[in-house]
Amino acid sequence: MEQLRLPRRKKLGYVPGMISLLTVPFLFLYYGNKRIAEIPNYRVMELNWPGQAFHSKYLSYVNPPPRQYLDIILTGNKDSDEVRIRFGTLYVRELFSNKDSVHGLIFHFGVHSTYEEFVRLLDMPNIYDIRYFYPTDDGLKFFYRPERKHGIKIELLPPI
Image (tube, rainbow, N blue to C red; front, side, top):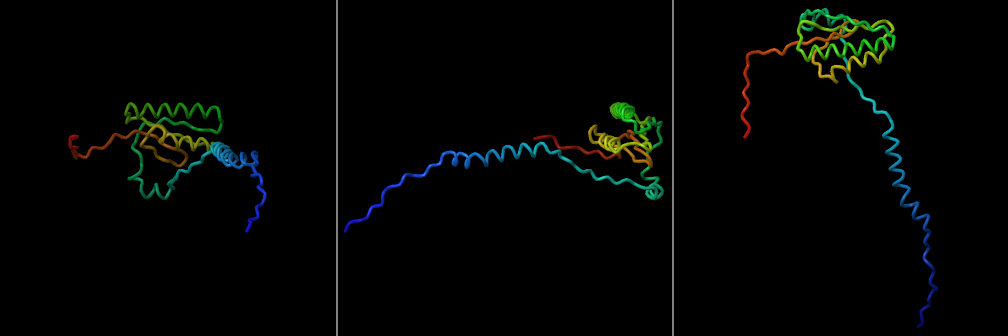
């Protein structure tokens, strides 16, 4: 018996289609990641601001020590407040670098102060590693408090 042979067909090879099939996913990944990198990254910081009831109940525990405070009033004028915040930042950094336990700084927010100024003042303790700041009714107090030594001596083992 003789087999029927079908004529051989040419293989279909569509080169532009194969190139686009292989390159389009990689181009999508590249430009997609590039676009995602341009999107701003927002973060959240939890903030608990004590009210008058808290101050009256726990005044002896929370109240900052008496100091000679320098008052800085933020009015809402962008240029002058920028200068005041920079001066206050330098002043607070100097307080903490000199370990000055006599002076302090109070920022007062005016009626027209912006949210941006508030956030910049809240970022200052995180950026410059400031441990002690205190919220007031209309602003923030910054002060240096020396570390308390309770007479407990901790000896670490020497390294091996």
